[in-house]
Length: 327
Image (cartoon, rainbow, N blue to C red; front, top):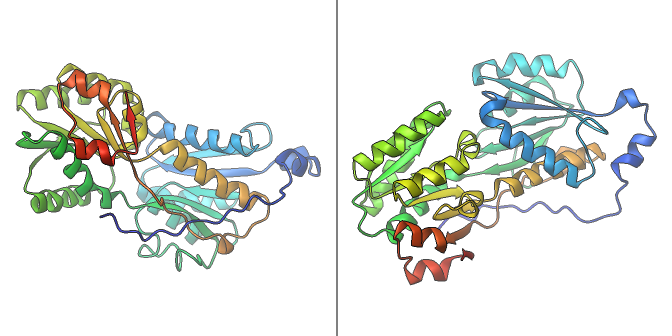
């Protein structure tokens, strides 16, 4: 079972002034700026930035109107210098989208609120003192996707019991890819399934990866969580259908787009949570008073229409476990 080390953020629906009311009391030149620090580029990670903007809009903050999102893209080794430069501009808040960017922001300032959106344990990483009491100027959300690796392998091999080999598709440019592969191998050893690696970081790479899996007679695949893949949801689902390759995904949006099944989160819901933290600190809340939030529930979504197209019969136990079945 996935560990339940989850602490839910209590964000009560108190009477809060609308952002427009706050801005009415300010000079237009003082519209709050929020720095957004991300790896790589907008081309392959812009999907998360768009989800963050959409989340802010739900709280009344519209980029370019009553808030400005200053997005910065850099490789991990450049984050300390980038964060130091960002701090000199005194943004209202800084959003760190990974452990390296969040750590760099924390090291660069002890006063500006830092909202993290990271995969990993923020306590073990030294970003916060504890989930319940972050203790300084850093708070936000975190996931532990490595805890889902065994479930992905278990679910896909249950759906496709004759699969002798499962391919794991990952972006070779992802930070920590070797760590992820180690988690996959450990999980595969426990459930006694053979796994192989498939790498893709471009559209052409995805085409090659699926063609290669087909040639190797791969029985099923797991698509690892990566922002780039979310830019290619339709291509990935199309290729899986073309080669009749059943797969499981970590974000719900894949199953909704026609993927066989997903177990995990909705990335749009996740970034809505990140936006909620930014909304709170812009209204005056202190990061130290906002507990770190982690997902309390992972959803299993099964797409029966895709299963029929792939020639997969979903076992009754999987259907019984599913939180949502798409007909």
